[in-house]
Image (cartoon, one colour):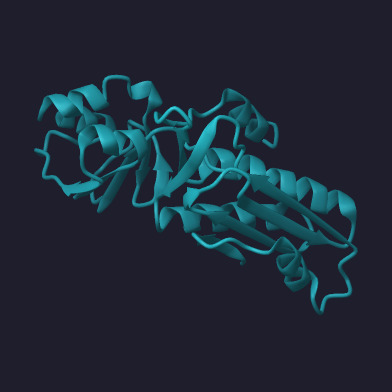
Length: 83
Length: 146
């Protein structure tokens, strides 16, 4: 699946998007973030405070406990600040 | 459905003309224009999530149409680098009577600020840059419509 990062999350991780293949034990957005944190220090640092992370699955807002089964695109980003 | 996300500037007067042209049933037009507040900054850069942004704005506009008897509505949001004083967002609503147009414009802005995936980064005069933080007051402004 494709994972997208925006704003300071993109800057801290160093890429705007990447293809990832988490193990089958990763079933939710929260699980995906926990798994990403184990990959490298920059992920652990970027996701240190998950209260300031928002999620969209296939371009629809979602929660941390949402299932990622069948998702093509998961976006992780800080709270939005448009307008 | 009139939603646009663009780097280019827009002309509020021309947008209002287009919104009301040919519909003499419209008795009220309300518009909001947001500007880049330029105190202490040299530039503001707007990042967004292409695809989701347009969907989120279209959804907000559809909800406004469902809630108020609108003859028309338009949402324009700029992205990319913007100078202080530049127009950044435009929302206009047209209705038979003013109450619906006023309320729908405010509703659209409240949800745009809390639901549409845009992020602002400010470049300060001293050379530093920072991501603008979301405000709790924006969340409570959207909450009151529930």
